[in-house]
Figure 1 (cartoon, rainbow, N blue to C red):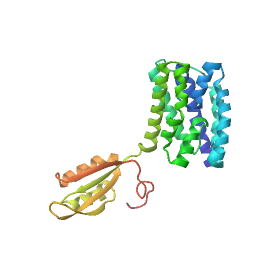
Figure 2 (cartoon, rainbow, N blue to C red):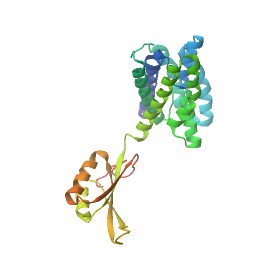
Figure 3 (tube, rainbow, N blue to C red):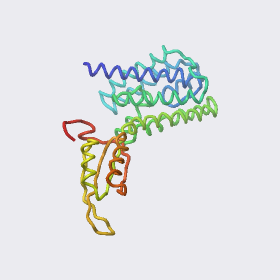
Figure 4 (cartoon, helix red, strand yellow):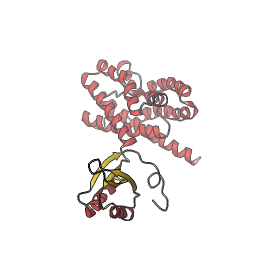
Length: 279
C-alpha cells in the first residue's frame, strides 16, 4: 500500500509539473510542443475549446489503445495520469510566468522532460502522445525520447498553419530540448568511467586502487604486438568523481603508464547497483 501511495504521489507531481508547463510556460507563448497538450493549445486558438476539454476527450481514445497494447498495469497508471491532467490544467491558472519567449520555452521544455521521465519510471504516462512511445519501445525497441519526438511531428506541423513560423520553430526546439532532457536523465546522470591501464608498476597501482579508492581491479592478460611481451592490463570501473584520484595514483607510480578511458552510462553489479562488505 505504501509503495502504491508513493507511486501515486510521483505521478501526481509529474502531472502537476506538466500542467504548469502548459499553462505558464508554453501556452502563453503559443508554443504547441507536440502531445495532446499541444493539440489543446491549437484547438483553443482555432475553436475556443478549453484545453482541459480537448485533453480529456483525446485521453479517452488513448486509454483504449493502452489497454490493448500495454496491458492492465500500465492502463491503470495511465488512467490516473490521464484523469489528473485535465483537472490540473483546468485549475492551474493560465499565466505568462516568463515574458521572454526563448527563456519560457527552455524552462518549460526542461521541466516537461523531467515530468515525463518521472512518469515513465513509474510505468505511467499523462496519456496523449506519451503513450505511443511506450508502445514503440515495447514492440520495436525504440528509445522513448525518439518515440516522443516522432509522435509529436504532426501536431508541431499544425503550429505553422495556426500560429506563425516563429511558433513552429519554438515548438521544434521545445520538443528537441524535452527529448535531450529525457535522454540525459535516463542515461547521462549516472555515467561512470571504465579505464584500461598498462604499466610496469601494475602491482603497486592495483594495491592503491584497492585500498585508497576502494574499487575492484580486473587483471587482463595482454601481449604487445611489437615486443611480443606479455603484460597485465588493469581494468577498473569507477564513479566519475573518483577518476581524478585514479589518475593521481597511476601518475604517482608510473607517469608513463598507458591509460585508455571510456565513459559508460550504465554499470550494474556489486559496488554499483548493490553494496556489500567488500568490493
